[in-house]
Image 1: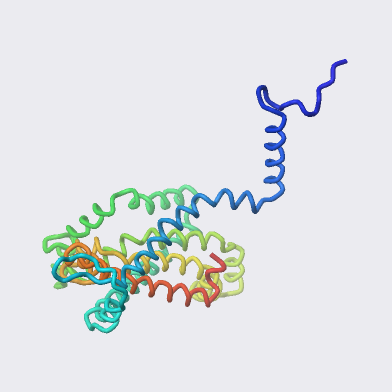
Image 2: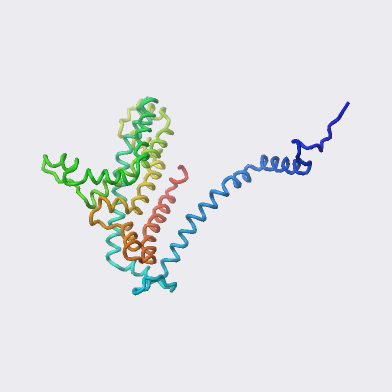
Length: 307
């Protein structure tokens, strides 16, 4: 009777030492789930840190440099001139308030539209209709950002559809300006608000709605006291998308905003026109700071823990 040695290699051509090390490594990874997760996420996290965190650090550093007014070259001269100019100039104050106001309006419009659509998808529609609605909401994301922005430019033009609809009743079309920018941005970010709210509504048990109805609560009271507290994390997740994306947008504002200035357009003007990268970096720190403040306020409410 022939016996096989336990030290024989598992595969042809593989040495016993190599097979043993591979087996030990497999056993170690199997027993340590956190190590497996760390190895799995190490590459994407490294890339994220290299691209995102390093870019933010470089942005912060550049804001403390200056530009030679004659040659246009960047001078590595550490000072806070750009920071004080951005914080003290009335122009930047006005543009910041306008941008924050636009971001708040876009967020409120998207939430108001997303709530009934998400509720219809999650609690009313049949599975087939639900899938069709999800596809319909995702379809605009397949189109180019520029195509959608220029489509809204056509809608907002003097002879566009909105002007044709509002003209006969004596109204005025939004045209190119602040209102047009808000409408366009609200359309662009609406899918990013619907989907988190839809996901949150799907988690709400139907039995709670049935119990509320059996106890005599009307629709409005059921929504305020039962549904709304449970979907607050989804609403906040959608608001983070719409608010932050509006703060930094400049392409759609330039296409449909006319002479409207926002923080994104100021950054673009300082980089592409004035060739003043340090000042553009200082301006871009404003929306970054606003987002950090917003996330800090949201975090204190505890809503982020339930996302």
